[in-house]
Image 1 (cartoon, one colour):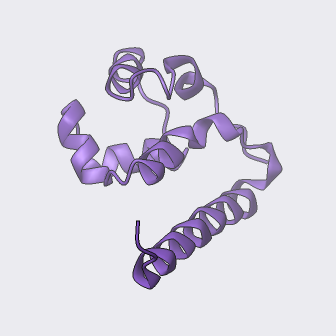
Image 2: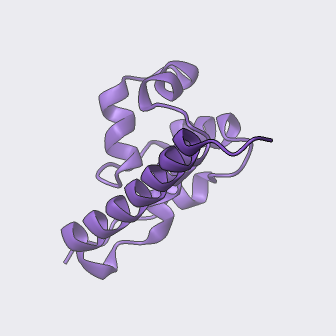
Length: 103
């Protein structure tokens, strides 16, 4: 594979975005928020899937999925199982069902 500067820049920006998201969450919720509530967000970033695409896949509104991915809402048991199925078990229903702990 030939070295491509554009790919390198994209990779660096993606890593910086992940770090920025992690810092934002830690600042917003303090260190008490479980990392499990963010696994969906990390999964979507790593797989280069947009919130809109994933929301269409599981049949829900993109804004509601965004709230779930950001750890601001807890999905129902049925929706948590649907997300687990759509991610092939990489994000489990148990992780999504954890209660958010906000200081």
